[in-house]
Amino acid sequence: MFRGVVLAVALLIGAAPGLAAEPADATAHKTSFVTTSDGLKLEVLDYGGAGSPILLISGGGRTAHDFDAFAPRLAARHHVYAVTRRGLGASDKPPLNPEAHTLSRLTLDDVEVLDALKLPKATLAGWSLGGAELSGLARHHRDRVTALIYLDAAYAYAFYAPANAYPDAVNVEIDLADLRDKLQAARSGSKQDAARIYDEVLAKDLVDLATDIRAAAERRRRLSKGLAEGPPAPLSRLMTRQNMEKFPAVTGIPILAIFAIPAPEPNLTPAERDDETLMLKWRREQIGRYRAAHPAARIVEIAGADHDVFNSHPDIVLREIDALLDQAAP
Image (tube, rainbow, N blue to C red; front, side):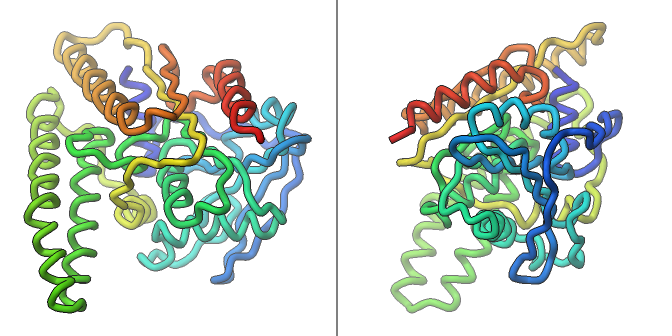
């Protein structure tokens, strides 16, 4: 259980102690670079294949090469591409300032990759923090999305529901970002708009914030080690802070959400076993909220899976992707 949790947190904050290096680049694919509208070059891998296009989006702190073992198998029925996010791998590194790493900028990067590939629409598959980009694309660039595939990626950063506790305290970050935006809008809007916004903040947003602070406090109190993570690297701190949006449920788009349920770790102390039980409880509660809000989605839980579920259980992931897209085909 802890390996999956540590890997997920590492991908979110960009520190991955003990995480294996990416696979050697021995896969048959073509590498190209797409220049974004703000002048950066992004690495794009083309694994080939016939059929509907799929763009793979990597996890936080990782690159497109994490898909090197999985993508060729996916290409048996689909044309598969993968992109390395700005600031990572062979892609250009912009300055470490907020404007270069906002969620709107990252989703625009994905749209510009689709433009360069001459793809009016594509299925988008995101791993881990890549789920935030999926939800951002669905919300702000809906016309470019055929279907969404969340690869252990439909957590708090991709779908907001009060009391989500995974990853740790991300809901609080989302609340604060949303409050800041709303209060700024109230200051610059008309008297009527300001009154409406302030009423909404008092009636709902502050209630959500209080709920999420209580959930974060419970997590810190009840886990034997409190916070297990160290401080994030500068790029990951920017990505985490700038990628927070209060995403509602996605409707009208075919969705596959795969959740990894890690196997119990052996040789744990009683306190560590209690922590493992709590983490699984919170994860299942969060999955339940996602399931309730997305009744039309294809939701799959894979027992014993690692966070990089497409590598630990590729057969199941391939089967579920094919089933989703067969069902979604016109």
